[in-house]
Every structure is written in structure tokens, then in C-alpha cells.
Amino acid sequence: MKKFDGILKNARVVSPENGLDEVFDIEIKDGAVTAIGKDLSGANILDLSGKIVMPAFVEMHCHLREPGFEEKETIETGVNSALAGGYGAICPMANTNPVNDNPETLKYIINADNRIDIFPICAVTKGLSGDEIVDFELLKNAGAIAFSNDGKPLEDMDLLKKALKKAQESDILVISHAEDTKYPPNQNESEFSAVLRELEIVKETDARYHFAHISTAESLGLIREAKEEGWNVTCESAPHYFTLSNADIVDNHARFKMNPPLRSETDKNAVIEGFLDGTIDVIATDHAPHTLEEKNLPFEKAPMGIVGFETAFSLAYECFIRKNLLTMGALVNKFSANPAKILGLKEYGHIEIGQMANLAIFDPELEWTVEAAKFRSKCKISPFEGRKLKGKIVGTIAKGAFYELQ
Image (tube, rainbow, N blue to C red; front, side, top):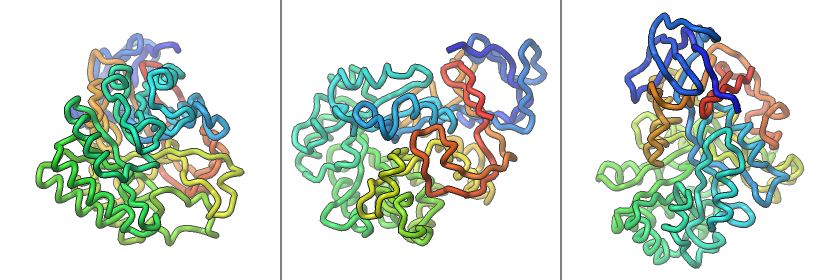
């Protein structure tokens, strides 16, 4: 993996944490940022006129499937897909086989691909069973960035309270897949009821708590109130929840099947508003690949999950920037600085002299059509198939190495 040496010329550099939103040159030597300024000169000039350079994105919710489900995705193909989307750091969930609840599996995932930083999220309970809490300290010291039972939510509130008390003592982040299985997933109560009961325990324990893939207006109302009261809560949503609703489902096809499911137009608009008012901190993808054969099964039998790395920023740019809903800096922070702060990744979320270059390069004028067959992910199906977009990630510099995508 050769480090990049050269100068990125004439790019609009957007790094709100440094107060940057201006056309600059960036000098990179041996993979590290050595200068940011005007009229820099040197060898290996890369003219990025008209392009936007941002801090590489931090994905705090994805599924790489390896070990155990390599027919859906491998860590290598997942990293390929992440690089194509502008990501420099990714946090895969624990639902592998074996489950990522032990140091051996954890270290395997961390070391499987050194092109980008992989910060795994370990299970809260052993085997994702919902019974016995893992050794938080052991796994944290081995490299776990956070803990989540993700698709197998904790519904034993006594166990959740015990887990959050332990997490609070060790300053550990717990991530919730808020789902009350007493209700069908397509009913808003499924998410809303879970958020309500979990917030009560967050208030009691003061643990750091992050709600994944929030999708309903009611849940956002609760989280908004909790944040206003100063609770230790953050949340994310995904591009499919602010660009699609259940009215967009075509032919009842499973390419539109995910958990939480697509909601109403009202919920979609509430998610958009949640980003605008700061209730939602992070845009995450919940990248969850499956095989084409699985996703072409009848809706009821097909697995839940869609891929997201390669379309995320383009969809967000279309929704928030082209409609003048957010500033470019605010959008960039949803992908980079905000998740980096929540996860404690001090080397991410900004562009600074002296740091390893982790950058995403975006062409706001490049028009393209989503063709899942061309995805770098193993998963070749998408609910956005055929969607025409304007603006695309065209290069990523990760850990100082340059990956040109066009």
C-alpha cells in the first residue's frame, strides 16, 4: 500500500472542524498532510478544480459478513465498497459466525484488511443471545470501539440496565437497535415503544447511548426531548429513510426490505427534519449485503438489509445540498466529524497538517445512474437501481494511500 506524495490542487476544501470551506491546495508527503494553502508547488500535481475534498467518512454501522457469511460479502469486498463511497473508517456489527464477542474474532476482523481502519462493534451479550453480558473491559482493551446486539435487540430491561451500568463505569458506548418485538416491524410502535423504554434506563444510568437507524417521527420526538434535557444520547439514520418511503416499494420486491422497514412519507419528512434541527447526529448506511439469490426470494422469505456505501453521499447531497436544506459543512460533519466524536476517533473528522491523509474527493457535477451490477460490494442489488444522481465520490485517500475511482 504505497503512500501518496503530491499536491491536490484547486479543490474546495470543506472541513468545518478546522473552519475550512475555501479553494485550497493540499500538500501530502508520504501519506501525511504537510501543507494547506494557496499556490502550492511541487511534483505530482493532481488538479481537482471543481471537486470537493472532505475528511474521509466514518461509518459507524455496517455489516461485513466475514467471518461466516462470505457468500454475502467478505471484508475485502466490503472495504472495496467503502472506499468507493469515501469512507476511511468503518465499524462492522457483531452478527458474524462466530459472533464477534471474543478477542480472537475481534482481532481477526481488525487485521483482515489494512487499507482502511476497521473498528469493530462487539456484541453486548455472548452469542447475541440476550442472556449473558460479555466482558466489556476485555473486549474494549482488545480493540472494540462500541457494543451492540444490533438486529437481536435487548428486550430484557433488567439485563439492559445491568449492561448500561457496566458500560457507564468503563465509559463504553452502547448502540441500540430499538425494536419491540411485541409489534410487527412495519408498525411504528415497534420502534417507538423500544425507544421509550430504553430512554428510561439511559436516564437512570447516564450511560453513553446511541440509537441506530431511527426511522419514525415518534421516536425522533422522544430523542429530541431527551437531548434537550441533556441526556447522554445520540442517534443516526440512513439514506433510505430520508430518500424513500413505503410508497416507493415496487412489485413488493425484497430489494426494498430492511429493518427497520421503509415508513410513511410523514416519517420520511420527520427524518429529514431531524437532520436539519440536529436531533439526528450521523448519517450511517447500515450496509447489509446479501446474495442476489436471497434478495430475489419472495418478500416474506427474503432477508432484511440493503447495501449503502456506494450511494450514501450522493443521495445525501441530492437531498440536503441541492435542495438548500443544509450547508455543505453541516452535511460533511454528519458523515465524518460527528461519528468520529461519538466514537472517540480523534484522528478522523477533520483535515489537519501533520496527520495521515484520510480524505474523500467528490465531483458535484458528475452525473451517473445507479447500476448495482457495477457495485464493488458483492451485493449487486439496490432499491436505488436506475436512479439518476448528480455528484459522485471519485477518489478516496485512506491511511495516506490514494484510491482513484473514476
